[in-house]
Image (cartoon, rainbow, N blue to C red; front, side, top):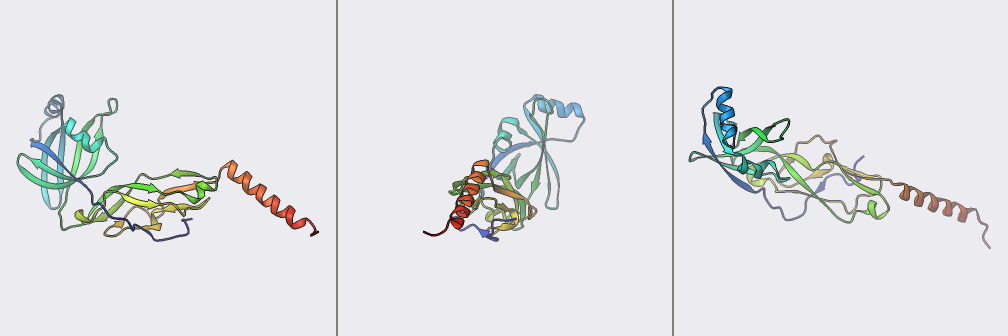
Length: 219
């Protein structure tokens, strides 16, 4: 079940998603040996596609790519490939099974005037009522997928859990944010306040005290 407050909305000042510039150099399609050579030079093979354009093969410095791959943040990417500029978002990454280094990256070309779908980090905050009652807060999602125009997508999705009670949950379907549409499944769990033994013991004690008081004859 949800929090009991469906349609939770963001009423805070929206900071729109940050842009990050990534410089690349065009490459040609070749044999695996050529790709391996690119990686030995500290570069990561990439491809840009979508938005009705032909695929663009390029490579980027692996150190520069870490600004996108080693962060909880999401970005709109300003790609500069040999002086040609593209607007894009990270679409898919492939990692080495042993070193966990990025071995290939796919970018999706986007337009400023067309909606884009992207994962946005969650900022969960507030002095949770359920935690104050002895419950334990469980974070079930760190990001949600949203759709909107690039200049309308927020940097984070602010979620106030002040009124989230013991035993209640917030799911994606409970939330709404100005300028974007949540496209993660409505049943996607965001956070839950679970009952703990201490909270259950306190509730049992309170119930027993109330029952004893009700059974005691008035003096």
